[in-house]
Length: 170
Image 1 (cartoon, rainbow, N blue to C red):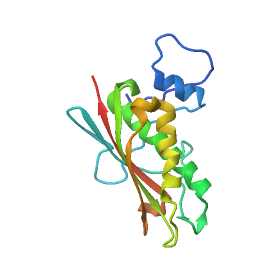
Image 2 (cartoon, one colour; image 1 turned 120 degrees about the vertical axis):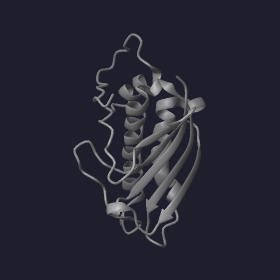
Image 3 (cartoon, helix red, strand yellow; image 1 turned 30 degrees about the vertical axis):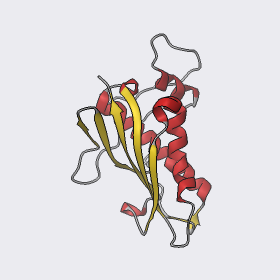
Image 4 (cartoon, rainbow, N blue to C red; image 1 turned 180 degrees about the vertical axis):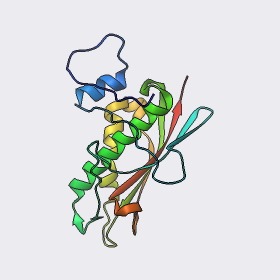
């Protein structure tokens, strides 16, 4: 676990699990799972559930997106940041379980937006995460309950932080 997963090319690969095929079709390569930035772990498994700590918009290049949505950061940019954050959540799932194919259901997503006080389109931002989870896992597994809320600030002034709960199988 913890290795980089290369999903390039366009041909179907024998035995390839559907989530990895979909990632490859989207042109997405899972980065290594981000390391915790403080005194916590990135995930905890309890029975049939994996609880994912909040992840932020950290690009594989090390670039982290900062700022206030609605005051210098557009909805479109923040949507892309939420998508990057979803990729990081997928990397944590892969690292924790060994395979995205062990996800039985994305149960709950909590999206936090570092928003200007007058900003009111938090769901449009967190759709960047939800849309990717649906694209990777499909309707039956990827459709989830969700909250999208605004925050006065987030760690290091990142634009979004997203956590999730997934049901898993062995």
